[in-house]
Amino acid sequence: MENLTPKEIVEYLDKYVIGQEKAKKTIAVALRNRYRRMKLSPEIQKDIVPKNILMIGDTGVGKTEIARRLASIMSLPFIKVEASKYTEVGFVGRDVESMVRDLAMVSIGIVKEEMTKANEEKIEAYVENKIIEQLLPPLPTGASEEKKSDYERSFAKMQERLAKGELDHLKINVEITQDAFDFGDNAMPMHIIEVQESISKVLGGLNKPKKKEVTVKESRPILAQEATHYLLDEESIKKEALERAQMGGIIFIDEIDKVAVSSVSSRQDPSKEGVQRDLLPIVEGSNVHTKLGVLKTDHILFIAAGAFHLSKPSDLIPELQGRFPLRVELDCLDEETLYRILTEPKNSIVQQYKLLMGIEGVALLFKEEALRAVAKYALIANEKSEDIGARRLHTIMEKVLEEISFEADRHHGEAIEIDEALVSQQIGEIVKDEDATRYIL
Image (cartoon, rainbow, N blue to C red):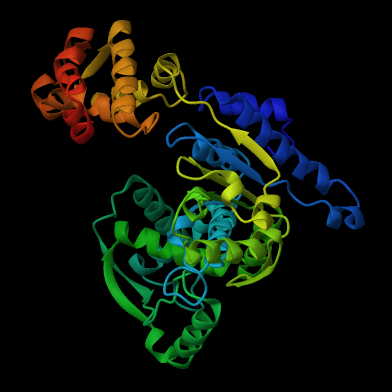
């Protein structure tokens, strides 16, 4: 996946995000440049830094979805954070370095999942042996060949019964490690986490494994966790996760406009500017202490996004502006685009509702004019109240299908047609009333 060309990246995104061609191209090129950089000599690599991106557009137009989908296809560590949740150093709250520590934890999760999948058979064999060892009397030391042969036959039978789920109800004992102190809060400054972990080691006696009786079915995830501890090389996982976060990590900073200090505002907010100044070294490139070790942020790709209704990009401090050289403005969603979002993506909203109701044995049949009406009412609702983009489609669809969903058990085995009349009946009056639109939709 890492060798995708910009065109292939955009083609993939087209399956999930409708429109926004400029934004797709910008991010596709940024990711391709990262691949190109890795093919250069180490001396030149040092001088080529990621071209961070500033995305400007209303909520619900696809900013996060574009970045999230790209990270997903390329197995890259990706986190989304809200700039407005951070506070200036010296104040109580999340410090900006915590976003890098969060990225490190996402990275280790990706690598651990990949290595677990690669060792699936070994882990399954470990779990199987541990279960059967408790259900089958152990083979005595120095047993005869006949006894060994009998044991092997009994073991094979147990394996068959275990695979069929015939032993799931039986009880066995497993060891569970109970951490007296779980110091996993990445929002805390690293020096505090380190002190807490030191205390945890000193009180290590409290973390001794405890035996617990559970069913065979309940034991599987517990034993699988135990297996990963024994079979996977923790240091290799940490090393790979650190490398992947440093060289391939993406941090999406949403609501960046909320920490901009508007030039037209009569009241300056020093804490907002303080958050920007704290962000600056992270985006420029610095060393952050994480549980994986020291993580360098020089080659992390930062994508900042905001609506910029009450402020503008130039209201950010000049140093931070300079760290986001690529600017892309996303288009507002018109009625046609909303209709396409309803129907075209691989995981379209219409398809989601069909699958959900299918679980209840109800087949939903959406008529073309009904979907056009949903798009029309979504646009009107966005215009009359806060513009929340494509998210409004979910609100409208929930309202249209509310009664059908509630009475799903009564409609089991039926096919229900969703036509324009039903949409107008459920939504029409609400949309006409501006106050009702604001509070209901």
